[in-house]
Length: 61
Image (cartoon, rainbow, N blue to C red; front, side, top):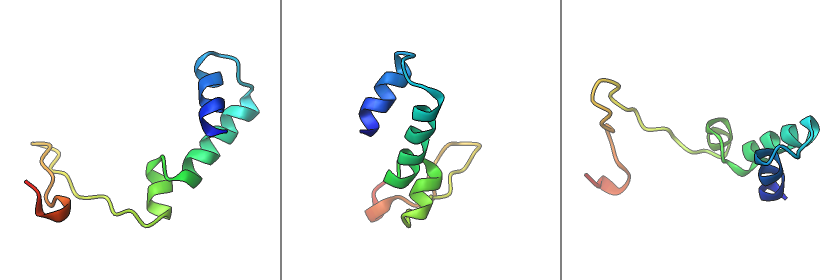
């Protein structure tokens, strides 16, 4: 359902209500930063000057 609504929105065929529903679904599915936080994802700190992550998952470099 989410993909159908997003595709309709990109083609300009979705109503404002459907676009709002897509935003809500994105949050519930964890496809937005707010949704990711709700699901327990942790955002790693990034050095804004260099763009380097301070800690990568699993110790990757």
